[in-house]
Length: 466
Image 1 (cartoon, rainbow, N blue to C red):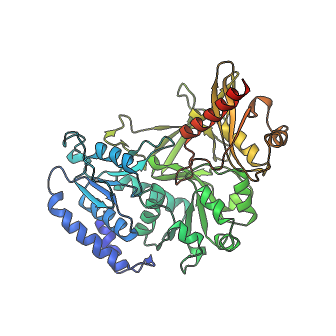
Image 2: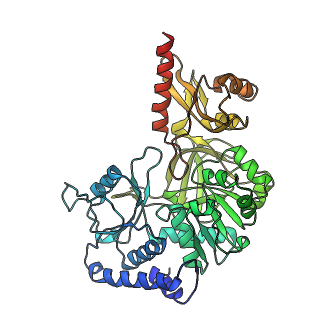
């Protein structure tokens, strides 16, 4: 397998960064690598926090760290103080590259979480899930390259050209750089806000992959000019959070070559993807498993289930994380996630929802994604999330927290609209209107915060009724 330094030499004379000076990237990467070389010769190489805001500085720093074999932690420069404190306490870095606005120190012993020589080439990518607690998934150049190779083989494409509007510290942005950098492709890096204001770069979209999260796609579809531009892309990858049916239908109506994906930080991005031609023909699932991965569906007793049987998604892949820093997994063969799904007769992965989000009300199982889809289909809400609130009689009460599309939409209207679409036990008993749902930059809802909002509102209603 070729090293980061090998690829750096290969791209030395290429003009591959659109809107940036490609040679400046090479120069910065080489300078940083030379700075690290004396430090990297020690048994315990320096731990680097990478929080560069400027894209070229970020990718050059990343490549230099990987080439020197130093453990590097990708960081969000917009983290607030308590998040930075979490990171400092966990990592206790030796070097900070970029923008950490807080002069933090850790009270702990400096030798805590000291990486061993065998761990020097680790690449730590942040993942927080919906709770907000920052963790770092441990990757290596090898796991990231397994993802790149699976992508190229699945789409039968070389080189890979990418139009990146996602953060480079996030796996979804980083892997776009990795695919283009290592395949000889071109890369455009444009902040999403600039794209929204129609600053698109001079490219031929039919030669490029674009990656979006559902909330970004929704916003772009509100702009007719950008919608027409989206429809010209070779492929628009969609991931990061579940997409709702109404959004998929709108994209299909505009002939956007959408490729819904399934993956996560732990798998170095997608391990299943629906190809655009199947999406345009009306299919709504996660598509086929990529060549570098194997997915099985398991029962609660770990038995492998048959086709169309719903169970827990279990993953085996060369792109799989080694663990969560600083601990490696004891068993790296299989990774069982919180998602429930099934594989159909065509080999497509279908995700039902998260096991931990499942609502049990009166002994019946309710999957929020099904209820959310029915509510979205009414066209009366701009956003919705369904949760379960604790109840002494029913166990949990199905509760819809929603953003009405118009101010005059009543709960009664919504109830009538879904009456013939959902069984009675699946219909929300509580309806909580809000101005916005608490989502992170990837579009994932913070369910803990939503639970607090809903519980407070419902408690107030019950108190006022007394």
